[in-house]
Amino acid sequence: MRNPADNQVLIAQLKKIYGTMKGEIVSRLNEFKNILPQKDDDEIFSELAFCILTPQSRAKSCWEAILAMKEADVLLKGSSLQLKKKLRCVRFHNKKAEYLVEARSLFIRNGKLSIKPLLTGFGNAPECREWLVKNIRGLGYKEASHLLRNMGMGEDIAILDRHILRNLEFLGVIEEIPASIGRSKYLEIENKMAKFAKKTGIPLAHLDLLLWFKETGEIFK
Picture 1 (spheres, rainbow, N blue to C red):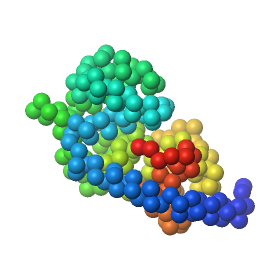
Picture 2: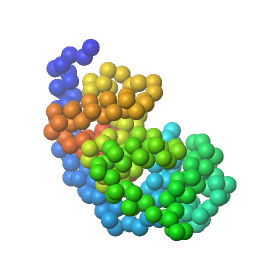
Picture 3: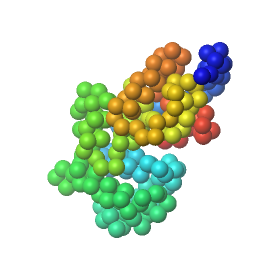
Picture 4: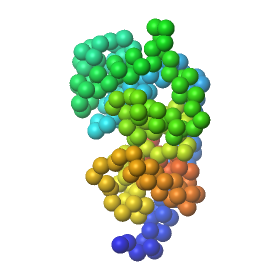
């Protein structure tokens, strides 16, 4: 077990990085907050599609695939076969193409996409996340949290991807990275991360992006 003094050194280092990056983190989160009120349902579906693609794939490759599908005009109306051709840079592209078509059909109302009323109709982000995970194939707690954060609704939830988990283990927030993360384990680690955020004075949403930056050297979607 690591000496508590060592943990304090690591926390001090984290706070120093936060002091340098806080302005950029706040700016990025403000961009997310503008997406839901300013973007139409077609653009919001692009964000949902991006989050469906991300499991076990690089975020940048996933966004490049979204742009490729939009350019080919297939994201919003293409068949799974048409989508597959644009998803070869993404792992499990055959399955994910099917997930995109299913998700798209779920939100069709009178021939048009309608996502915003649903996302804004829940009492809080965790409640909305539960619905998303239950109803959209390919969307787990991490991916649903990612979507809500990108919609400016993620202040009270965490995106527990491998970068975040690795840093939480390094900082002593969790003892080890679990082999698999079901609902109860996800919520348990999220709660520990929220307590750590309060302890350090770094808001949870800020901490999420900060640890991502610490691991990757950039702040992406």
